[in-house]
Each structure stands twice: as structure tokens, then as C-alpha cells.
Image (cartoon, rainbow, N blue to C red; front, side, top):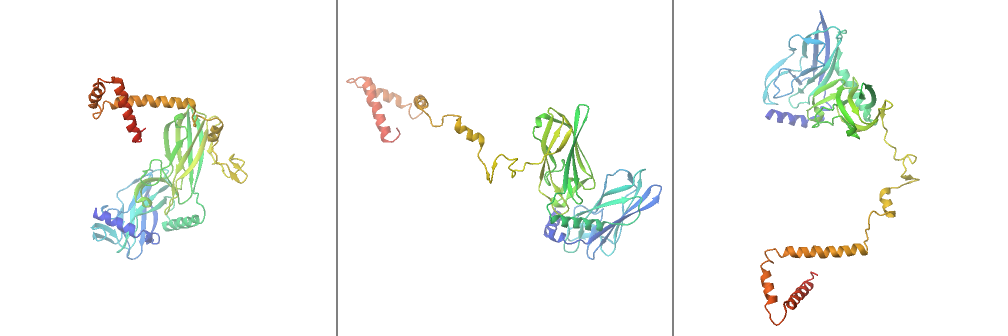
Length: 417
């Protein structure tokens, strides 16, 4: 636990430096060994005083170097990956645990022997590493790689990173719109298939429908009339990447990269000829994220057409009935109509006043009867009755009138009537 807190402190303290420092340059190459066997080599050149951690170091401290192949098919690993360089193992004062790391005075090299299946020409994926010096650690970094088995030339990963950085800087000077959505519809038997296709600019990613909402906003599809649409199946395809994302405090995310279109296909049954709704998504590059964006869509099952619905231009008087010249009519039409034909008599009249008086009398009488049952009033009933009936000079009803008149005078004096 202490090492995790210590790591979080360093990552947060030096996040600004991470935007400027780039002490590790990766390159990779492939060597043919014959009989469909190849040696994949990953080489890291580090600046002086910087180190990179082994694949086999404890994850209780720094983030180990890891290699993820996408997808892990079309080839077979022949044994574990071997590591070469100036290796050092021991207690690390930055993390308080024993680590295995490679020093910067020699290149750090990883070799993985594989056997490719027939027809496999490309092996791609990404490498995750962490680098530290004596004072700080940079956040874990992902580096994409692409091995062309027909080309054994060394490929410099740093050039790819440089191109991504230049693209990001160019995009900052204009309004960013890195994702273009298109829609398609087809029918097979009694079922319809709705396709949502995202073409993503280089350097950007879009997050899966199934990613955790503890981090970025997942892609979401909402129908305006969900009761008329039954979704039988929902699938995603594209170049998917899953793992911790440093933009969201290393929350585990699922995202789709730019090398292939991100496509969502829904198999549905519909009780209507037109399906409308909206799609929500979030796009990020390696430095920033754009706010969640909404895209309206419409699928016409009768004519087998689909497309994005442009939002109305509220500044156009021709398409907006509320604009008259330079003024905007903000009146609520339905509310204005009630002035001509009122929904009810708000002022009141003779009939409503009569009903109100009788209802007040009835509720007052019932309330008085209930008050007689309260502990403070009920014991007084025998005393009141004996007072009214005990005097033989007057009839009981006369005493009753006197008693009632006295009560009314008291209430008027107290302002209760």
C-alpha cells in the first residue's frame, strides 16, 4: 500500500514534466529464422540516469513493461520473452520494494520468438512501459508497434510518436472534429441490421459501449421511442485496445483506435417504419479529451435509408416560426390560448362562493364533533350539561343560548372568528 501511495504522489507531482520529458526512444525489428519462425525485437534507448522496468518485476511497485498483441491469433509464442541490457535488481528507495530494472547506459532489448501461421503477414499491438530517474517517475506510456513479417528493416517508434504530437498541435489551432459518423441499414429475413460507423482521425480514439463509466463516457445509443424497437443483438468491431488509461487515473478502459473504423451493429425487430434517436460518444487523443458529443440519427425502414439528422438552425427565420424580423417570439402558444378559452374559473362566482360557504360549515361541524373526543374537551361535557340543566328558574335551552353566546363573544374577543 505504501508503494502505491508513493507512486501516486510521484505521478501527480510531476505530471507537468511528463508533458515535456521523453527520455526513452523505442524501435523494433523482425528477423526471419526460416520455417515460418521469426524473432520479434523491441529495443529501448534511454537517456542517462533514466531506467525502464523489467517485464518480470513485481507489480507491487512500478508498472512492469508489458507487451500486448492485437489480436493474439495468427501466430504462436515459442517460449517466454528474453531480456537483455544492464540489469539491476534490489530494493528501490522510490517504491520501498524489490524491483528489477534496466539502466540507461545500455539499450534495453526484449526478444520474443514466434511461429506465424500461413497467411499471417502483420503482427501488431502495443507496449506499455514506465521510466524513472533518481527523483521522479513518468506515468506509464503506451507505444504502438506493427511488425511486417515481409520487411525486416528496423522501424523507429519515436517517429510515429513525433507525428502524433505534430498532429495534436495542429488540431489545437482549429475546432476539433476528429470523428465522423455514418449510418446504414439492411434487412435479412424478418430482422433489420442497423450499422453505426465511426471514421476516426489519426491519433484519436473512441470508447466502447462496454467500457467502465468510472472513466470516460462510454458510447451510448438511445432511441426516442424505445418501446417500438427490440434489440436482439449488439456487436462492436474495429481495432480494440483494453487496459489502464493514464488520462483517467489508470482506470481500466476499452477503446477503439484510429487504424480501422469503429462499427456498432444492432440486430433489431421494429414496430415502426422510422427509428429515430441519438448517439453519444467521447473522443480522446494521448493528451486531451473532447466533451461528450451527441449525433442524431434516423433509420427509414420503409425506404431502407439511414443518415444523420442535422439539428435545426434556430437563427434561420425561414425554418424557425418564432423569429419575426430582428425579434424572437418567446411566448408559449398553448399558454396564450388559455386566455381566450380559460381552462377554469380562476376569479370565482356566486355558485362557487355558495358551495365554499356550505363546505366550510360542514367541515367545521365535523371538526367540532371530533374535538369533543379529545382528552381536554371530553371530561368537560358532563360539567357543561349540568350547568345548563341545573337551574330550575329557566328552561335548559335558554341556558344553552347564554352559554353559546358567551363562547362566541370570547372567540370574537380573541380574534378567532
